[in-house]
Structure formats: structure tokens, C-alpha cells
Length: 220
Image (cartoon, rainbow, N blue to C red; front, top):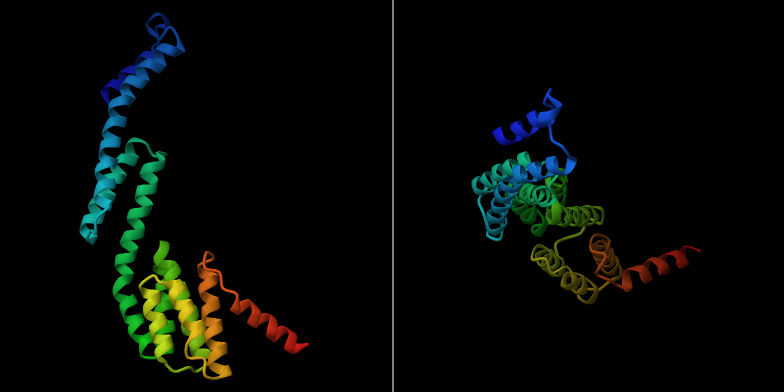
């Protein structure tokens, strides 16, 4: 940047008479240099933010990532630019795991718990953001269902579908109120619902902790 070089040269000039007479004068010139860079950065980030409100392809997200990196090159510590970059990386990660997550859903809905565990375990290492939370919950479920040698009941299949639709509270309600024809099924449903509260603390359920208390008292 020629203007910045000129400011630096004047600040470090060998002739004291040609240097800045005060820090305030130096700050003013630096602010004048920075102002157009900040406008360009803010305009660029504004365009990125507007586009991120839409569904975008992988190529489109990578183009936005290049734009954000350009903004960061002007100001590496700018918080909104860093936040935009993290959001884009989350979206790119979601796109990469989406196809494999569809495969995991098929395995879950068909009762292929071992295959579901394998796919979800791999996806958890590659996922970010909200999708990572969903995958962690589904992995816990798959392991529970595998340990209990469970079959895919209508209730479990419906709960899985609700979970994929981000209706976690409805999935928990379904598990706690339907298909409880025997103690084994009731226990499994309570444990599945309990995992929902572990991954979504805003969903509060009374029955799972009461079940844990019941088990503990019985063991005494």
C-alpha cells in the first residue's frame, strides 16, 4: 500500500524535522489509510452475509470463503469476519457429511445398528456445529439399540424421523408415551429419551431421572 508506506517512511525518516511532530498527527494519517480498507472490508462482509442467508452449493460457499479470507487479510483479527469464516466452514462440513448421513438414516430405519454405528462414528469426527449434535445423538441411539438387540418398532422409527426433522421434544414425548407394552421396551424408550436431554439440555424430562432413581433404589 503506497499510502501506508509513505506514512511509515515519514514516521521513521532520518531527518527529525521531516518526521511527524506528534502522535496525533501519525494517528490521523493512519486512520486515513485505514478508512477505505475498512469500508472495502465491511462492504465485502455485507455481501457475504446476505448470500449466507440462502441455500448455497459447495462451489458458492468456497467462493464466499475466498472473499472472507480476503477480508481477513486486511484485518486478521476482525471478529465478524472470523465468525463468517466459521459459519462457512460449518456449512461446507454439513454438505460433505449430508450424503453419508442419508446412508446412516437408512441403516437406522432398517434396524442395521452395527452399520449405523460405523457410519455415524466416522461422521462425528468430520461434522461441525448443529449437525455434530444430531450425529452424536444418533450414534448414542444406535449403540443403545445395538446393545439391547432391539428391532425397529414403529415408535422407534417415528422417533428417528422426528429427530432428523429437528423435532427432538416430540421424539422424546413419543418414546415416553407409546409402545410401552413391556418392561424391556419401557426401559429402552426411557434410555433413548434420556439421551435426547443429554444432547439438548433445554428439553427437560422427568421420567428418565425417575427411572434411574428407581433402578438405584431397587439395587439397594
